[in-house]
Image 1 (cartoon, rainbow, N blue to C red):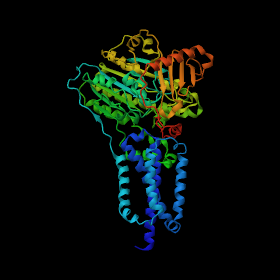
Image 2 (cartoon, rainbow, N blue to C red):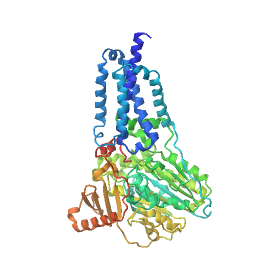
Image 3 (cartoon, rainbow, N blue to C red):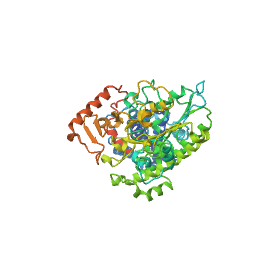
Image 4 (cartoon, one colour):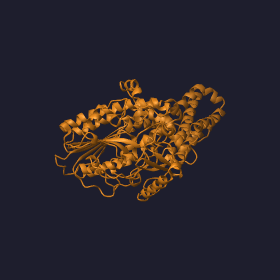
Length: 605
């Protein structure tokens, strides 16, 4: 080999190893700061291989372009490392202090090993390590990324019970829409959009216009809907938490024990089976999209500083969720293959940000922007309008689902359909712009629900819309009563059937919390009772909101000391009755992770 070729080869090798060292260090940063992602082995593999592949290729390019210069002035490699480290620290300047050191230590170890070969190329030991090993390592890294982007997640399947439910048992369908405020929907008075399928469903059932979400994020709210328990009693306090109260009943377990076929079809990562949401389902489909290029973009976005800066977030929908048509199609396919009475849960994520509805939904929403409510903040106005387009899209998917259900049960005369949102969205309320996880304002907590029974309720038109405040936890026991089942013991929810049938029920205080671990001292717990909502932060700050005032985000604590004291005691009593399950953030999650959430590295979806 000529000297010139040897120089070029050496420069390429050094460039590759230089890139790997930077990539390993960044992978250590990101995984140490994202404990949720670090629980999934396949995602760990993708989050490591993506930056190493990208930075490795950039390093090879650097070696090709500047190989002669680098071979003449090898000290430039020494200067490259402080520069690379400075870029990483600039991109992750709030992360290092106090985070979980495990992956960062491993990343540093790999980075130092690669750096040793770059900075000391003439060490005798290199000739025993380098030949052939770099090629093998490069192939392993590339294969790892290819596997993670092409792989198809499995479906969790468990055997059906040996005895089927009686053929005349009513089917049960639960539809959950992610991030849909109650006041946006026409069934609650919202304007600027049409939801004909939801409206038709509401005409056959009852609309609950004041369902108080237990949390402003996906996982805790859904677990409470399924179990009838408040988050401190089931343990899922934050996205990425796993169910702790495995002995607690839930809707799927209850119905599977009675011979139902139970299928769950979810669109968001935070509802995956690894977090306990599959319990009781015979078929639980949490597969992410199979489009490899979208998965690759997602890994590059989340795992690299440069990806975060230059990849538009609107490209990422299919990496944090599955699009509604995919989830709905899989649910309908399962439905047609099932001959037993069914419990079907369909979760759709399309109304979650970033808001980028396809045509014609986008154009329709923009054309009708003036018809609907305006956002509190002009900065969030566009998002608020575009979300209406996403909701119209969800309504069309609801129509597809109802059409598929009609094939199993014509007229849906023996099918119970419940639709509810997990939480809403702030569009400027309390200074929160197009977000939700840090809020207990009514913008995130007040959602709507529709319950269509399998039997006709003799109700007047005025009785079909109920503004009585209820909670997510009330849906499980209510469905049990509609089905004629005994209410599970030791749950927090209560049966709403008397309310649905036109009777009066006593109001009660409703618990809620914003307990995303990354909020730390800003985590919130609160109670809503009548027109008042009392909220307390982890560090002791207190808030009192008058929900009937024009600005229900204004702290009225000083104006109503008696109400403040009463609701403070009420919250204490509720908390004392709860098990307080759930992981508290440890040393790995300091206030610096709030910066991660804002960048998209956090757990706030």
